Length: 585
Image (cartoon, rainbow, N blue to C red; front, side):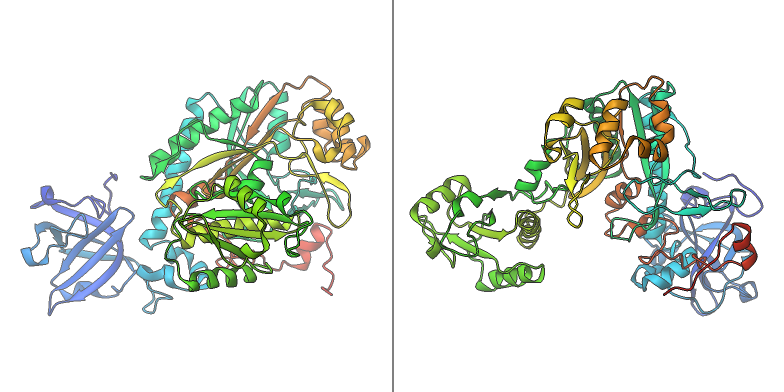
């Protein structure tokens, strides 16, 4: 409902048969103009819908063209039977205009047709984003975004969380991505940084005695764009809980996400509790730490069957196998296309064999197998007639990744992925550390503030690469929706954890001084996570690209084509913040 004023008494979608005989005024954009020989029909659109306005006096149409803004007034009448439009909610009525005023003029030549704007090149759409947003599909995505965020706020408040805000101007800290830096005018040579996440501040709020916090948090990272990652700025539902365990966080996330997805989609939503899958199991069974559980195929590690094998491509390699059922009748072309795909993603080939009704193996791999290997593959991979067993062999790092890609691609081609569901899981037990490929140094795998499983004892007695963290992700349909952790609140453990990653206690004081100081004054155990709002809405809107659910996104090259950002600034502005731009080599 709208409040009547001088521009309109009804929204365009409010006009119904109940209004026949009354006078109504509407305001909106002229979507279409149709001249039927002296009688002109206008389709007038606002946020709520479309209504037909009939013009009998051509004088009213001066300066009226498509996409101009008008207000029109007149009696509501029923349409003739042959002109009823069942495609719109107001399709049985129309307004016969006695008065029409142009409120906002529009150029005669449009940059693109609003109704088909999603088919236009992205750079043109983003340059004229205010017109692209008039497209119903695009417009509805942004309205969905508003509704989802409102619902998230309501749910978090119902669960006892207090909404707070944390600073945007902050200090630079090594959190994994490049910072956006802001030079200080008052402090020569010093810089603020936009927060990559509210990480330190939300932990400080727990130290401050707040029990459960949340915010719809803007985060800023100078990262390259992907289909599911917007460059520059993104939003997450950040929440943190004092005196909380990993399972406490999971219960909140399950209630929140189950309710949100159930409200905003008709698809099946996996019920709580969501499966808990260890990182190690994920990498073996799915070849990724972002498993798509709609895909029923699973990967099996068969490396031990090919130690010292006479088949050189498999000999002493990491070998993964994928059983694909229902392959009876698949043509030779299917297998040739899969092998071509494998070569395109960097594989040297894609071995396989088919299983016949009498459990004979047909295919290029079979001749390299002995009877013991055949029996073990049958049992371990649960082979059955009319299935195919694919083999992926490579290095210990590459084989799981490549197997994960093949698993998803063959399932897509076989139409095995359930397109009518959202299937959630938690990925848990991430390694605390990993070895940098270039330097060989031990570095943090993810969040440096995670609590190591086993605490100080694990850090002092185990190989760092064997230490697991209380760190977790939420994954839905192959998309990482959220990451989080039980935080490290013990200063002795934190000092040791950073020492293993090459930081001294002095480094800790310098780079994370506020947290280091706060942990001297009584820090409670605390934990949390931060589901990505943009990704959540992208999934609910069934969009392939995250920019479709952001009102004013940057393009894939981190440019705002609407405002022209990033833009040059004046020499005076640079002088004020003590910056000199050097030529780019």
